Length: 115
Image (cartoon, rainbow, N blue to C red; front, side, top):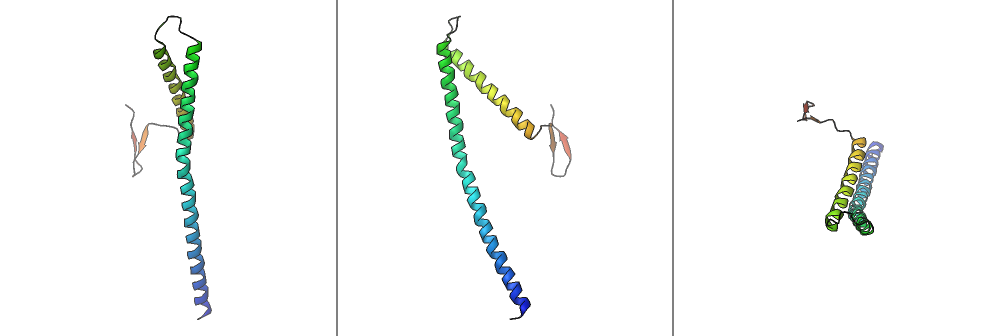
C-alpha cells in the first residue's frame, strides 16, 4: 500500500472511531437528562404539596373572623399562592426570552398577532 492510502485509511478509522465514541457520549448525556425529568417533577410536586400543607396550617392558626367556610378560604389561599408562583415563572421566562406578540414565519416575514 502506498503512503497516501495508509494515511487516508488511518484518518478514516480515526474519524469513524471518534464518531462512534461521540455518539455514545451524546446518548449517555441525553439518557441522564431524561432521567432528571421525573426527579425534577417529583420535587416540584413535593414542593407544591408542602405549600398546600403550610397554607392549611396557616389557615387553622388564623381562623376567619367572618366565620365563613374554612375550606373556601383554604382554596383561596392555594389559588393565590399558585397565581404568585405563575407570575414569578412568567417574569423568569420573559427575562430569558421576551415576548413581542410577533410571529416570524419560516420565510422571515413578521406577523403581528396582537388582538
